[in-house]
Image 1 (tube, rainbow over the protein chains, first blue to last red):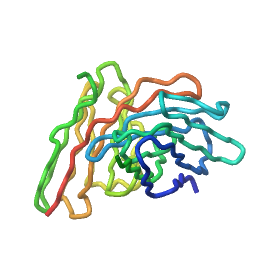
Image 2 (spheres, one colour; image 1 turned 90 degrees about the horizontal axis):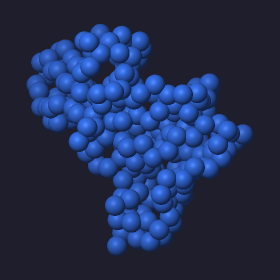
Image 3 (cartoon, each protein chain N blue to C red; image 1 turned 180 degrees about the vertical axis):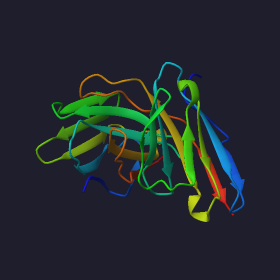
Image 4 (tube, one colour; image 1 turned 120 degrees about the vertical axis):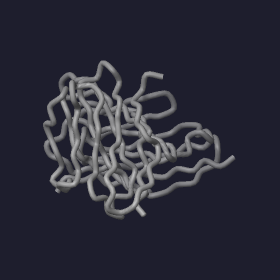
Length: 107
Length: 117
């Protein structure tokens, strides 16, 4: 069954700290994996798109990794800011999305 | 702002009524998608257009749902005889054709929140 599982479900960190969110996928055929940031009441915003041949991709303070062998991806947020408080969703093109990790950054 | 625009932002309707939502994609994007999202869940794929052609429709979508994209520009999503289970955020996204396996990012609108009472 094609699916994406994310962990943890929720995470609370202090401003300035780093954190890592996990995404495990079982999707076939696989073309790319995407990470999105979704603020409350708004649509998701694309952070990165990773193909099976890419191991690491950065977008500012966000760094995504992909291990095609273990079918795992992670999103690392460096030096968190209050504005990073949001849900982070991983998924494949078009069809399959995880339920997200709800991140709260405290001052 | 030339992002994806959705209207209305909120809609409250009584069970059994019909509702219609509109999506205006980014003008140069030929691909348009509709999703439904409930609280604590990721977006659930509903349907996909390439230009004016509806190429894919989720098997989960009941016959009460219909979408159109006349002339390959804006799109509408209609729900007939609404049920309480239809209460959700309805998201529209658009994208340009991707190249190779990279694909192109989906640009989402801020959705229409439907409440069926």
